[in-house]
Length: 270
Image 1 (cartoon, rainbow, N blue to C red):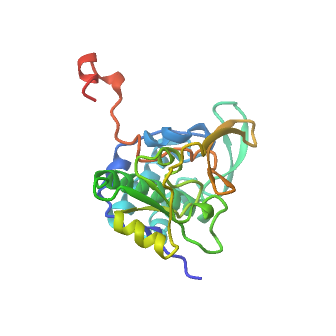
Image 2 (cartoon, rainbow, N blue to C red):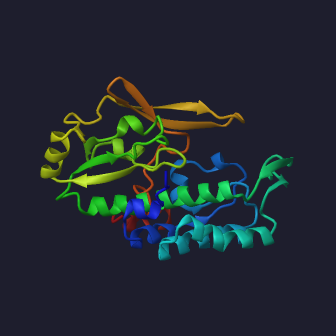
């Protein structure tokens, strides 16, 4: 089965996505869970990248992907030689600055580059799509989960397929995709006629009562003992839970000004 490239699957012009990426700073992290949830809206990071120049190379490649609409093969071709030349490739011992211990870690690989590419494209495009859909909410106020249903579909997203909620339903604060690593789910905005069409042919399920009373959250312990929060929602008899680090909307807090940087009179205008 041929793999569909994410850039074509999402079909979104990149301007909003690029603005989201450009709004981020950079942060060095050893483990992926050192920066969870909304923190990703403020900084670009890749676990086990302990040098800013390499982090900049990765961020630059992602930005070029957004700007030029590159496929994963383009992304890999432009980036892999640079990472190899700088020694960020294969398995190596690196120092964990938090503990002072040396640990064998997987640095660059084709698999890691694919994860970096897919995760950033999905998150960045979802943030841009969310802002665009919010701008059009007056005419298309109903949002539907669009899930790619095939052998790769996750147990997380499968129950969400076709579920329709209003744009202002609280479900979108915690389960707007991506909901896990390598997530391919997106959100489609509908008007009244669209909801009727989707529900009439069985492709959509209208949640007239919204998600009230069905949303929740819980803490989970990761392999190394760290604790993360996941979001949950009840869909029929199934409880859907995000993966750790995905219980937030990538576009809801993006581009938001930091009130601490403004004088009190100005804060009221934010």
